Length: 294
Image 1 (tube, helix red, strand yellow):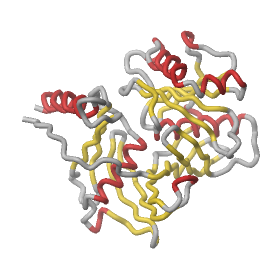
Image 2 (cartoon, one colour):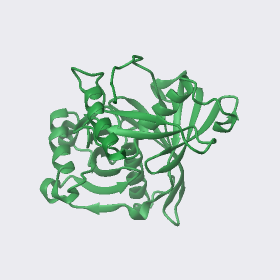
Image 3 (cartoon, helix red, strand yellow):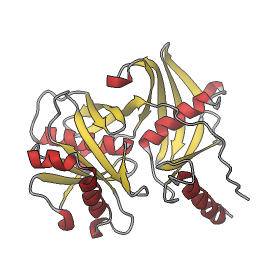
Image 4 (tube, rainbow, N blue to C red):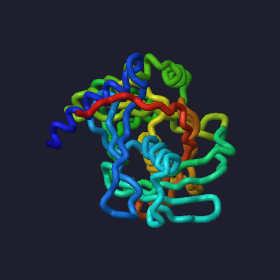
């Protein structure tokens, strides 16, 4: 009975993610075998509250690293050597098939000399980005947008004012406003993730970003699909402002470290292709957790 299994998994995930009586996590990913021998694994992501999630960008990067580290990539068809420093694998997530790249000794800000893991997103049509007004939580010094990058995302782009800088650095305020938007009537009943970033780069030439995630119901250290969502909105604004020299990489500082979004942009059709989320993935825990599913 698949519904009974989902109920059991949901309960066990809540136990595993518990910060005091479990391992402590924002979610749990199950790697399953796939009927296609060229697909390395099927990825099922559960939020910390036990709900079945959609695409988790950083979780997918971690899943690719885990699959390699534990020896799941044994079949020749599962991996493709790009060059002497990069291997590509295919996997399936909630929104369909994806590719993940394992790059040895890459460089990305403070992640230099670490293995970098990238995942490839589906093409993004910037014309689908909606500029919206969440009446419950409006602001005169920001703009609000909605985009789905495999998971739904509300993106609030802040003007670079002192008040907004103070707000951005205050986790309690981010949590309060993020929760208000995520749980607002506008996004009922399925809710959304809520991201906060600025319309200009910080002094280190990177964009700052913080995310309040549904399912976790809190501010998290990083959100991969949220990072891609914010990048898409920023690129949409650049096109609207007719910026001539648009880069092919946008770099972000999140609470958990550094992430890059790579892409090819078609200005005429306002689409992004070859969209990649890139960053380091590091194992921090290796333990057998007793969870009986019978």
